[in-house]
Image 1 (cartoon, rainbow, N blue to C red):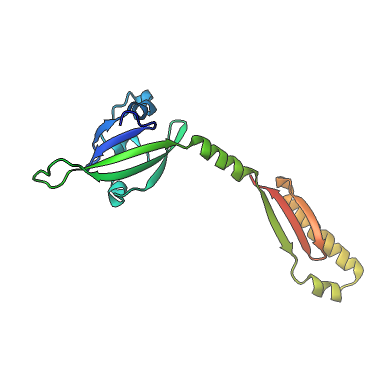
Image 2 (image 1 turned 90 degrees about the vertical axis):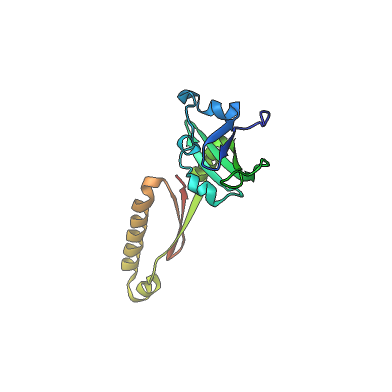
Length: 171
């Protein structure tokens, strides 16, 4: 277990830390690793959740400047049961996913959003109104759309008399 290339900790069924490797301890160097119960050292991880999913789940947590994916599995120990029943250990592995999360955030902030705007009843207006009224209404519509999207530096393209295409940089 000492050669596992990722932070690892083994807990008793009650959440008490029984063993951990150096990589796990190194995550908490600023605290001189003073924890006895896993709930106290992994933010957001509730022991009741661990017990609810003994065959394993994942939990993402931030510790300092790093983001970790915590995985676990409950294993029946091969030692003889005591008066209280079988012995179980819960093995936890932590994978550093900080770079993955930074890339995900960067991607989310860089993609383009597309909006289609359809002006309702524009055909009815154009059939009943004179040319000056239609031009004035079109100008006011364009002005309203432009002032609405201006703060986000969007690109506006009129695709038809009553249709506009707006491209936003997602931020």
